[in-house]
Image (cartoon, rainbow, N blue to C red):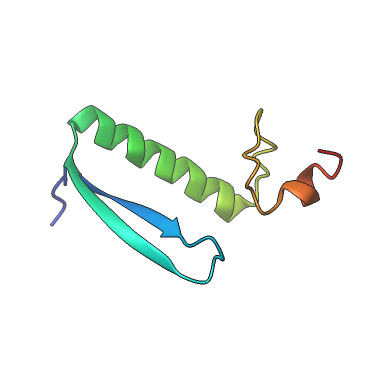
Length: 76
């Protein structure tokens, strides 16, 4: 049955300093209809991009811990 679920599970992943182990923490939240619909719209957009092979381009600001930073922006 198609029943809207207005709950989300947020997973926090905490890696050890040596990156060999991690802990997962979860947080279950109730969300509004509008937030759920916004999430579904973005999920569908990202799915279409992945399916079509559309390149979303680079973000305006990159996280310094991004593992792909040296590939996308080799000069910094």
